[in-house]
Image (cartoon, rainbow, N blue to C red):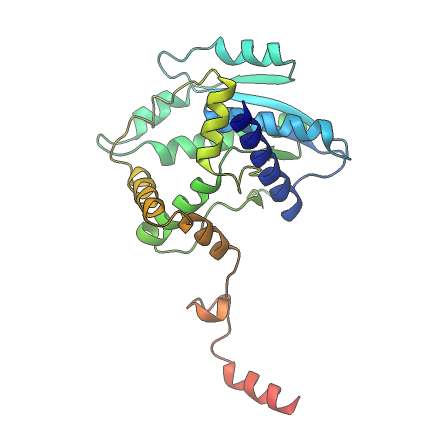
Length: 264
């Protein structure tokens, strides 16, 4: 029980820091909390409900699940859970499973297409529900893994930002768990015995590069337990002049800058 209280306080502290640091929530917001049925999204919903109670401002929450019509998906679990919790919610039914399976070549991973279809459907739902913000359950480990995936395989320095605006410019997407460790979320989820729904579409693909990167980070942590914290700090401590991107630093006019500095 004591360990659970410590984990709860730790998660609440990390979420509070993310909300404050990235100015996530404002008076009058209506936030759509995306609930997949996994440990991360259950924890996200719990944290958002907690801050709705204690925050000095007023904002609304609606939990939304996208039923992608995966075979064997237990349709009753989330409605029962959310009804018992007394949370405003909506279940959206859309057969993206069939589209993903039809369009993905054999042997290829389904995550990219599945993610795009799910994202588009959720954005549309947020608009229809009158939400101005949308909260996702990605945590610190997801952010670090995405950074390394882009670095090693996509050739770019990019990751999941804690807050951003969608391409259409009409929704703000939040990741309130951005500073939370996956291990803390797992402990919290187990302690509260959330009714976890496994993802049989992408979770079973053993050849995902993300799984390899996750394993690599885990091994690093065994050697140096503070490695992930250092990496997370690095993402918040960027020096454009010490990278190689011409679009964010003017290497061409450095000589002019030297002249300006000498005159001043």
